Image (cartoon, rainbow, N blue to C red; front, side, top):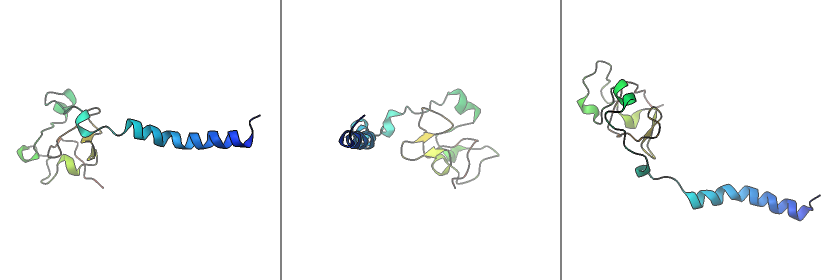
Length: 100
């Protein structure tokens, strides 16, 4: 049976380990995600464009763009709909939904 000192030591190590690992690994910079290729099948299916100003779709709402979509993450440029890729903040797709 471990004594109190051993128990406390392991408890502190368990609490600090995630913080230490984060400092070593860090956050992935936005550049680590590849840009969504224009020919990507999911992008084509959702009519993704890199510049919302060029959209002529009837479902387009003026002012809508990736940067103000609920699926977009500004920190890394990722979109929940295009896993593993970053999208242009000025882009748009037919799945656009206003950020809450």
